Image (tube, rainbow, N blue to C red; front, side, top):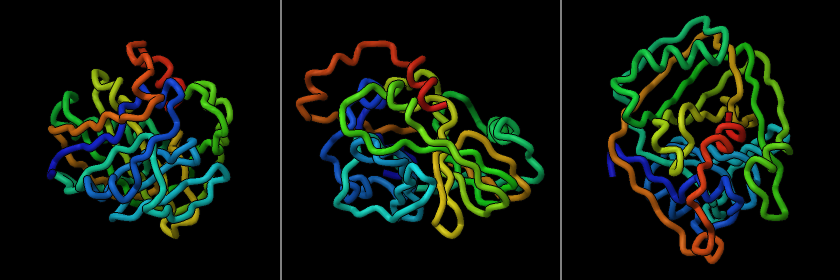
Length: 233
């Protein structure tokens, strides 16, 4: 569906430790060609760009993901930007966030974000594969952080309103993929020498609710906002 965000499972399930679902990447791909998420057992970060899935591993390396693989959480859309903005000399992630915010029509909509450019620095992280069910906050303690210097690549992700925090990650959520498709991770910080930003405002949402035993028996009424903010930002 054009101009719609598809979420494969509510993020609060992931926050509470439901790290496996049977939704395949092939199924997710029918809903969009652009997005992010993670893989079963939190085995790295996900980037979907131009219809290809990439697995951003815990050492900062990247593999193409097979469509038979599964995800407990993914957000995808058919990317069609409404606006493009040139970027020059942004010294930190906050500068990028402020630039994006100035071009938002309203903070009550969802925005798909794509940035291509040359980065003086990328500060990113990823999480190693988990072998037991743990909350996302506990897993975040295992995250591995790394820096890439003087690197070309792209940022892929979303800005989502706070009121959607039980469905998907609120605020800015971006993943980095290098131009040569060899390096990547969940974005923690960046310095942009030059580049271009594309924005797509999104005003429709499609949410799948899983039917796994773990999901059906989970208590998802807890306020997970603070836990999600700690784990993702």
